[in-house]
Length: 192
Image (cartoon, rainbow, N blue to C red; front, side, top):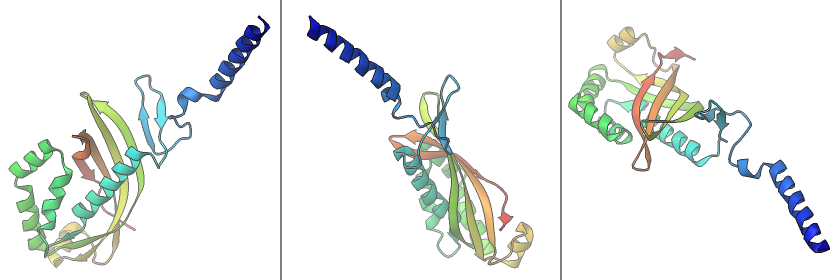
């Protein structure tokens, strides 16, 4: 009888200790980061920078910006690689609009060569919409225009060999287990 009471007390103490350590909430991070989701109740759930999904999105974002913004009119085939980063629906839309042909024409007309110098200052917001997992990624990137016609420089207000910063916002959708771009937009260039 005494052993039952001791076992009962020990079980009660053990349960109390487990509940105080928050064993059920180990995956949540209470420290605020730039990587988060808002629950249906409006609570914020933060993710550490080394979270697998965060790292995957940052990696895909870096690859995409380097393909998208690292342009060279002498290598138009690079532009085809950009389409691989989009969702199937977005790729179809861009193909119907003859996106690649139009951009290649602009690159050739203005003889542009642009190089990405730095990418950073990431933010990731995870959410679901229409039953699909999605994420909005924001980041800054700095690029330099290495070559362009005088006409392009006048129209765009850019200078050669000068660093410009842009903030990029990319809407991702998890499609067939891969993060694909549904939409993207970049801010106006700011000289830095």
